[in-house]
Amino acid sequence: MLTSKQKSYLRSEAHHLQPIFQIGKSGLTDAIIKQIEEALEARELIKISVLQNCEQDKEEIADNLGQQAGLEVVQIIGKTIVIYKESTEKKKIVLP
Image (tube, rainbow, N blue to C red; front, top):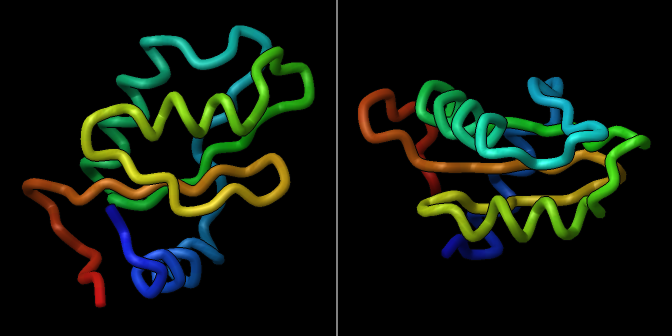
């Protein structure tokens, strides 16, 4: 569980990032979750964009992602979700 200070730090780090995943009409599938986990291992902090034609709500998608082991939803702003997971091998971000 992240503290508010850690979330604030991660939000500032994510500000300049572009979304690398788009969740569309098919919603959040197992294949997308697997790709997200692989990207988080390499980058630790990513943005995901929820498209307008997505049938799932962004809050529901964030909840589903938050239930995955080790994934932390940092922020939901507009149609964008910021997610963090500490990398086991390529640790780049040092939390305060």
